[in-house]
Length: 289
Image (tube, rainbow, N blue to C red):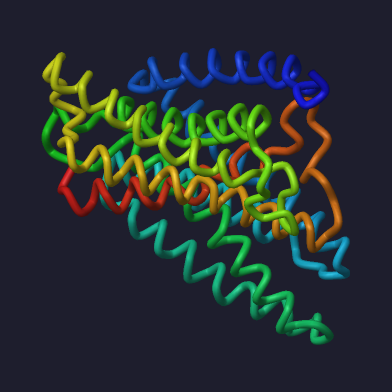
C-alpha cells in the first residue's frame, strides 16, 4: 500500500531502537552503564537542541548553541548525580541560576533581537533539557527503599505507553482515517487515529497494571484507576507533544528536524516523550514513589 511506503524503514529503525533501549534499561543498575545512560541522554539532549536551533536559524533567530549545549550536558549529568547523592541538587540549581544570568549577559552584546533570543533560549531549555533531566529521575528515583530505588519498570512503562500511542494512531489512521485531526499542523494525523492512540495507551497501561498485580512487583505500584487515568493522560499528552513539535516545524517550513532515515531527527523521535516525561514524573512524586 502506498500509505505504508515508509513502513519497512520505520520498522527497521524501530526494531534497532527497541533492542538498544531495552538492553540499556535492563542493565540500567550497572554502575558503568549508569554513566553510559546518563551521557547518552545528555547527548540526545544536545543533539535535539542543535536541531531546535537550526529551526530558529530558518526564522532568522540566532541563539548560542554552545551555551545551551553546556547547560544541557551539565544539567542532565547533575540530575543523574543528584539521584545518587542529594548534595548534587546544589549543582542542578546552580546550573539553572548560571544559565539564567548567562543568557542575559550574552545578549548584552547582541542587543538587536534580544527579546526573541532570550525567550527562545529559555524555551529551548524548558522544552528539551528539563524533561530529559526528569527522565533520569524516573529511572533512578531518590528513595531510601531499596525496592523502589529502581525505575526500570517505570521507564519501560513510560516509553511503551507513549510509543503505543504513536503506533496505534499511525496504523489505525492510515487504514481508516478520513477526518483530519489537525490538518494545518500534521496533515497525516486523523481524528480516528487520535482516538485509537488514546485508547491504545489506556489498554497498555491496564496491561502493566495486570502484570504488576500478577507478579506482585514491589518497584511498580499502579492501581486500576491510576492505570486508566495515567494511561489516558499519557495518551493525550503524547499526541500533544507530537503536534507541538509539528507546530515548530511548520513555522520553520520543514518536514523533519533532521534527515535521519525512518526517524527524521532526534527531536522528532523525542517529541511525544518531552510531554509525557513530566506527566509521569509528577505522578510518581504525587504518589510518593
